[in-house]
Image (tube, rainbow, N blue to C red; front, side):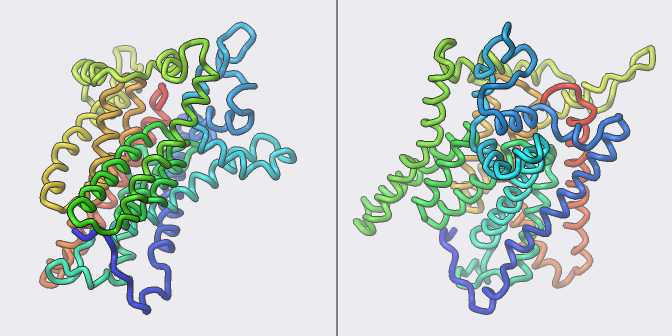
Length: 441
């Protein structure tokens, strides 16, 4: 599979198809998502703001306003409680810093509400950039080109628009995709991760390294992107060893993981200083969030002891147990992602999936499933593996469908039905976990 996209003909450059379709798709998908959240929340006596400002949303906006100290959550941060930093350092600074920078010019005049508004802007803008990057992956690197995969024939503007719409629906209609529009770091991290993969496939290693640096300031799972950069450097070294050509590219590839690791390493060193009294950043993670790597023991115990029943349990007195669907959703997400990782080996070895897309996806899945912590946050933590591993399959399915449409035009309705069904399931899961489920997601 070619790792570099050929230049587009001049007539295809006149209109920026992919970013425009990404913008329209994101606005439409987020609007529908918010409408669903508002309707579902109103049935439970919750406003849309109350639905969207739960759990990590509160932490992100508080850190944006006050930094890592100077506020309280529960007993933490109060005179008689633990220092708030022992919990707040679990949240990497990239997202709250960006929100703080956007809100700074007007926050003094309008109060705390501007932080929430700025967070919404950051999340939506990051979602647009994410879908834009996914569109570029689909159009430039995953779509079969011409007869026999001829790399000289680029996708047409119509094809580019359809692909960008499809991958936008895949990303923003996924189960728990509501976090992309909430004050969560998922949308920013995913935008950086997607474009880092785009730059890797284009072999623009220094740009990929800088993107990973910022991803490392956003989420700890960026360590898998650093790993991917290191593997890319090893591949370039092997090519150079065999050909002795393009030493400059090898140097750039080797510099990329060094640049990329600076974000994670810098923040953890700073956090270690703030939490030295209890053993540093990782001890704070374990103490405050029970999050530590245990080779999957906690995940296995959860899966083997939790019901897979997605229905709400009604007791003898007519009371309902709304936690059961949330527990089942969390369990199913772990099982299905594990199956997806195994199934992805076939498209990887047959060349239908670039290793630059496969490696970070499987590594994030392994990192998540191999750790302890809040099990009902797994559906959102596994969004990256779901997106990266399904992306080539969706593009391949659309490519095959195109050839069938010549004789069977009625098949054009299939992707529409599948897309609607995907969004229905995804929005239902988002509403179930945010509105009805009682615990953190």
